[in-house]
Length: 314
Image (spheres, one colour):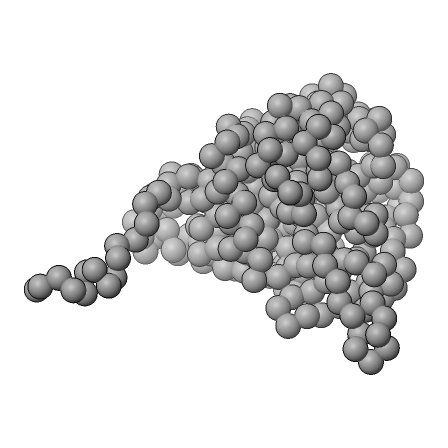
C-alpha cells in the first residue's frame, strides 16, 4: 500500500494533488469524488462582488489558453454564508483564496475568512488579469514581504503565498514571502500574455492581456520551483502544466511538496482523480512506499555523456 500523504506545514494532505484556484468548485462533486483530493482550493474571492473583465475572456493558442477572467465573484460575505457550507460537505482541507487591491484590505480579508471551516488561506498576490498592466504585489520583493507580513499578523491560519512567474527575481520574492511569514509558496500563477486577431488587428481578449495556461509551461515552472526550493525552507506547491502522474513526480523531485492542477482540470475535471490513481500505480511500479520521500530527491548531477559512453570499448 503506497502512502501518498504529504505535509504542507501543519496541514496534512491525503495526497499531493489539488485543483488550482479558479478551475474548481464544489459543483465538480457531480463529476468526481471530491473526497479523494489532497485539498479543495476555492476560486479567489474579493471583498466586494466583481463582474470580472470584459469579454472575450478566453482565447485558444496552439499550446494552451490565454484567459482573462478578472476574478468575478459575489464577494466575501457570500463566500462565508453560502459557499463554505457547500465545501464543508467534503473532507479534504479547504483552501480559501483571497485577493485585494491594498495591503490593508489583504490583511482584513485574511481576518474575515479566518473561520473554523477554512483550513488554509491562499493569498493571491499575483493575479495578472486583475490589472491590465499585470502589476501586483508579487512583482516586487519588498511589496511581497510587506503584504505577507500584514496578512500573517491578521490570522493564525496557515498562509500560502501565490507568486508570479512574471517577476524578474522570483527567487528573491520567494525569500521575501518566507520572511514575511508565509507558511508555503504556490509557484506559480499564470504568464502574462497577448494574442492578436489577425483578421481585425485587435487584441483577442477584451482585457487585451491575459494569463497563459499550458502544459508547455511545465519545464519553466519546474525550473522556478527547483531554484526557489534551494533558497527557502518552507514547502512549495508547484503549479503549471500538470497533466499526468509523472508531472507530479517531477515537481516533487524538484522540491515541491504538492501540486496544483489547472489547465488539465479546467478541460476535464476527472483529470484530478485520474492523476491520483496513476500516481499510486507509478509508485507501485517503482517500489516507492512513501511518496513524500521524493520531495527534493532529484540527483543533482548531469546525466552521463552519451557520446562519451558510446566511444568507450565494450
